Every structure is written in C-alpha cells, then in structure tokens.
Length: 385
Ligand SMILES: *Cc1c(COP(=O)(O)O)cnc(C)c1O
Image 1 (tube, helix red, strand yellow):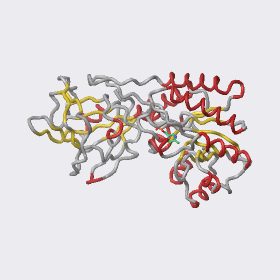
Image 2: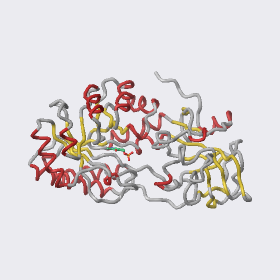
Image 3: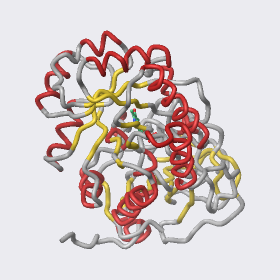
C-alpha cells in the first residue's frame, strides 16, 4: 500500500516552504494514468525508455502500473531496473557496445539486442540463441525535432543483409526503428512500418516483432501562456496510424508490435519550478535559479514550451499581458540563457515562481550541478494543477 503524498499540489508545497532552489514535482497518479493510456491504446507491448527519466519514483510507479519490459542503453540502466524489478525483461537498444558491456549485459540477462552494423552483430556471438536481435534501420523522414537517424540505423539495403545474418545465426529476428524524439507526425511511423515490411520481404525473413520506437510527442502547447500553440496530435492518433500501417504493410502476417516511449510516458507527470532571483533593466531581463545546465537544457533543441505560468510566493497567479523576456539561468556562463525570449506576464516579480509543465522527460536526466545549482529532491504531490 502506498502512502498518499504529503502535498496536494506544487503550489501547496511552494506556499508553505518557499523553496529557494529549483524544484521538481512528480504526480504518480499522472504517471500511472499515462501508462494506462499506453496500455489501452497501443496495439502491442508497451515498454519504457529508461534514459528519459531513471528516478526510482518513475521506475517503481511504472512497475506498479504493470510495465515489465524496459529499453536500456547501458549496464548502469540495466542494474537500476534489476533493483526495482528483478524479473523485468531488458531490451538493450544501444547498438554500439564495448565487449565488456556485452559480457555484462549477457550476465544480466538482456533479452533483445538492437544492431545496425555487421561488425557490431559479429560482436554478439556469445548472446544466447533464444535472444532476439532486432535490426535497426533509419529513413530520412522528417517529423521529429531531432533526428536520431543521423547517428543510428542501417540503410534499408544494409538492414536486409543484417536481417538475413540474424536469421542465419539462429536468434529471433526482429526489426526496430526510432523516428526521433518529439515526433508530431504520425506519417513518420507509417513510412517506417511500410519500409519494415519491404526489408523483411526482401530478406525472406519472417520477423517475430517490430519495435516502433519511442518519439511519441508530449504537448508543448500553451495552456495559459497565450504563446503560439503548436500542433501535438493525441497519442491515440499515432496508435491508430501504427495499427493501420501494420495491417496494410504486413496483412495477415503481421509481427507483434512493441513501443518504447520515454518522453511521452514521463513528461506530463512532472512540473519544474524555478524562482525569479532577480530582474534587471526595468524588469526586462529575468534571472532564474534553473537554466540550460539544469532541468531546462532541452529548450536549446526543442525551443520553449508554452506550458508556463507564474505565481507569487503568496500563491497569486500573475495574469498581466505576456511579453517575451530574456531569461538567464543561475550559472555564471553566458550560454546559460533560454532561447528566443520566454513570454512572461508583465507583473512577474522577484521571488515569484515560474512553473514549467510537462517537464518529466530529459530534465533531471540531463541536468548538471554546474556552479552548484541543479535539481535536488523530487517532491511527490497528488496532482499537478
Ligand atoms: C531515446 C530512445 C527512446 C525514447 O525516445 P523518446 O523520444 O523519449 O520517446 C526509445 N528508443 C530508443 C532506441 C531511444 O534511443
């Protein structure tokens, strides 16, 4: 039985404790609801990409919500999963591995292994026959904010040869791809699934599974910012596109599907709160106690999220017209500046709290303690708004 969190909302904690360091809040109820949404809608096995957020609170709540398979990129991540869920299935989907990492992953019982290169496949000679080897391919498709295809993934021609080699090795053959993170275009999955069927057909191999990656987007559309709203399709629109494309491409011979969301699984469950340390130049420039070396590092690549609100230490929501501000983080590095100009209400004042919604992914995972700043403990709350 889990204890009910001590705090009802982030605001309740902020008003009572007035923290002067940046804070992250997690609502386990939101995380578990997201896991249920994936389970209800995705037409296959739902796994979690640990790298997006490897906090114990995240892993234990996902296990409680029924997840038992995890996408891991390193031996450390495997050990973390073994600690919270000893019987979990491990998918080792980082295709570049040292020999020592391979030996350790075999010892830890990794089941599925991705490959995108013949020399790396040769290094997997000791991987047991009952394991799955999943050939990762990449297409030059757009739709994601950044394109993992530039680093990992074989061309379709190379994938055909790799898939034949996997089948010949006696391991369970599979295909996988990752459309790139924060991918808002369902057609990206359609293009990949269509190509997967072609690759399997050309190789003459019946694949056991098709791993459609992560990349599912989390909404960055402004709720009360008045900023420009992006277009983030609901997860269900992507699930439907995946189901349809699989049926069209593979017909009755469809492989089992699996997905490995990181971002879309955890983003909504966290709010990041930074405090305004100072205002300069007649209130124009804002200095926060978190920035690009902390939980806000991703906004250099993804741009600003519209999901920002400002509250006073007394809990009053700042509602004045928003104007774009230059916002600096707390370190002494001039790079520590948010891109573009964050639209903040004109009445935002020193000591106010700036609340960034949907910040569970790649925040605490990437944040540093540069200059002695960073995110400390995560505070558990019942709900986030
Ligand atoms: C990072 C990664 C994921 C998760 O990506 P998200 O965009 O966070 O969903 C899934 N699979 C692989 C192979 C990855 O590298």
